[in-house]
Length: 106
Image 1 (cartoon, one colour):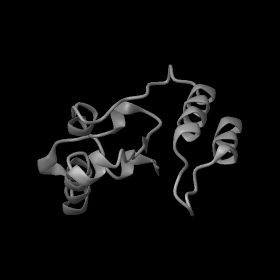
Image 2 (cartoon, helix red, strand yellow; image 1 turned 90 degrees about the horizontal axis):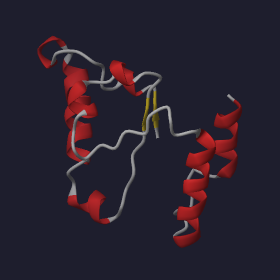
Image 3 (cartoon, one colour; image 1 turned 30 degrees about the horizontal axis):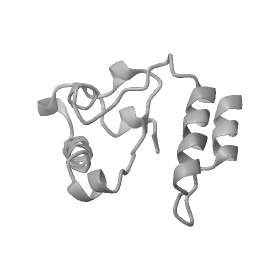
Image 4 (spheres, helix red, strand yellow; image 1 turned 90 degrees about the vertical axis):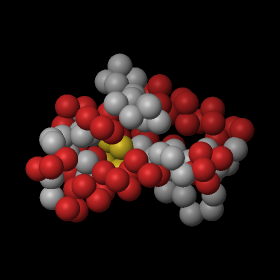
C-alpha cells in the first residue's frame, strides 16, 4: 500500500515533472505490466485523498482499478477477509484486520 500516492505520481504534464517523479511514474506503469506480478495476483494500492491529484496516465491506465469514495472501508475489509479465506498472506505481511480497523477509525 502506498499512502499519499499523489506525492509519488503527481498530476501534471510529464514534461514539467522532475526526473524523480517521471521515474516513479514509469516504475508504477512497469509494475502494472510485469508478468510475474500479474501471474502472482500482486495488488498494489495507491491511496490518495483525491483522484485529481494523481497523474492522469495512472488514473486512466487500463491495468489500474479505481476504488472511488463509494467503496466504504468496511466493504474493503469484508473483501479482504473473503480473500484471506481462500489464500493466506505470506509470512511477515503487514496487512491484517487490525490495520484496516485503525484506518476505519481515522
